Image (tube, rainbow, N blue to C red; front, top):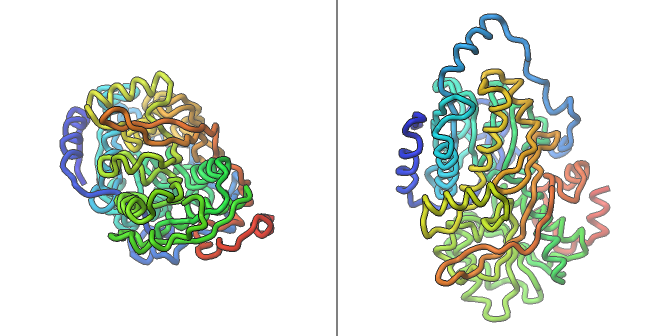
Length: 478
């Protein structure tokens, strides 16, 4: 782990962020809530409970104790003069490294904008590399909390890391804000992971899959090939997308699940069913580049369009490689650089000054706006993050205009936000984004109910979508 004091956090992080060459992919299977960092805790068999995907308020978790001893109160009062320590857990090495660096840049930019001080207190960021592995992330979380004495954990991109850390923070009773890309569908609704210490302020699978499926159906597409990377997040997002498309009357004519890290997508793309009129795709990271390369080479002029569920294919870091190949792909995401609000305009201006000539990174924006939420909650408690219950209550009360639009939280401590359908467009010799549709105030369940999501059991339906009809799906959801 690397410590960045508040006075130098901006310069140091910026220098480090420029050095890596790893590229993004996505997350393996989920972890159990066990605190020990064993590989068994993050095996594919350790799937979160689906039956309890809609807990009552009492099930989410008991409130942390609001009572404090006189000694604790005295210690907290003295601590207010000390820096606030944030533990940022990200996959700085491995397939998600570019996303991790973008997330760190988002933190970097926000702290720079407030001169490293939030609610009257300096901020220290201590980073840890989870290597996209749940057991490693769990070990790093324990080190950050127990050795480095951070007051809050942030970051996390990979699904197994989210599950592992969420189980730990419940036991350790430390606030944890998911400010990274983790889209794990069950994170805040499964009692194994949900707690008042856990808050997600970024993205959820169905929250983006449902608008993508609706947009595709509205374009007149009825026969889809489902192409989703074969790992936990891919299976969850694939199931969510298929269910949302079939719910509207579409059909899945073929399912393809390329392995994570596939180098040659030719054999995958060459077998695409020619009767399909759309490709509903979740192929994030550098896999997305290889997928589009093969798609362009093998399918010719009459190829069906790609709908990029969650925007993992046309993520900003891929555009330099894809260039014109990205044109025409439509994606779903919680942020687009062309959003017309004052905070986004200020953010885009600052980004372009810091990274001239680059497209605005979605992942920088996600973390930047997450820190806007953190700042607002911290100000409500006058910087006293040590008063956990008051801080958690302030965080839960979030209803804030951020760079990516209005954000609030549901009763499960998960984000409710606008989801945008957008495409990459050519702007002279460079590239930008254009919004083609806006879905307002989308919850983690989108157009499904919590009970339907529990019955759907996303992540377990691989191979069951071809031949699935709307009537059969309705029976499952009853």
